[in-house]
Amino acid sequence: MLADVYNAQGDVIRQVELPEAIFGVEVKEYLLHEVVRYQLARRRQGTAHTKSRAAVRGGGAKPWRQKGTGRARAGSRRSPLWRGGGTVFGPMPRSYAYSMPKKKRRAAMCCALSLKVRDQTFRVIDQFEVTQPKTKQVVQLIQRFTTEPKTLLVVGEPHEFLALSARNIPSVKVLPVIGLNVYDVLHYTTVICAEDAIGKIVGRLA
Image (cartoon, rainbow, N blue to C red):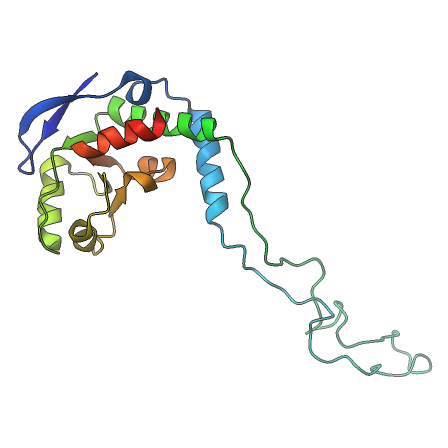
C-alpha cells in the first residue's frame, strides 16, 4: 500500500509504503467501541464524594426525649431522613479503570488507522517546518491539507515548537507516536503524520 508524501506547501514529492497489516486491516466497529470505552473509563477522575452520617457535623445529643412529645422518635440530627443529614450509599472516590488485553488495543489501533486511510483523511508530510512558536504557521499548514476543523498532528518525537504553536488552536492536537491512541485518532477528522513517525508506528504495532 502506497501513500503520497507531501511537503509543507502541500505538494506531492514522493510516495511511502504503508504496511497492509497496520493500515489496511478490516475495520471492526465493535472493537473500536470497546477500546474507546476503556480509554474514557481510565480518564474518569472518580473524585465524587458525599458525606455519610458519620462524617456530617453535629448530632451528638438526642434532639428530644424518646416519649411524650408526640413526635417521631429521633436519635441524631445527622440521620439521612433529616435535612442536612448524611447521605446513604452516595458516591465515594474510586477508580473506574479496568484492564484490557494488549492484543485487543493494538488491533483497535490498526482498525482506527485503517479507517482513516480508507476515508482518505490520513496525510503523510515529510516534516513539520515549524522553527519557532508561531500559531499562524500551523494554521496555514493545516489549511493546505484539509478544510475540516479537527486535526491531529502526529510526530515521531516530541516537537516543542509545533506543540507551542498548536496549543492555542482548540481543534488541533499534537501527539508523539508514544501517545497515539484510538480515541484521538477517531475524534479528530484529519490525521497529518510526519514521515519519520510511520516507522515508529509500525515498530509499536507490528
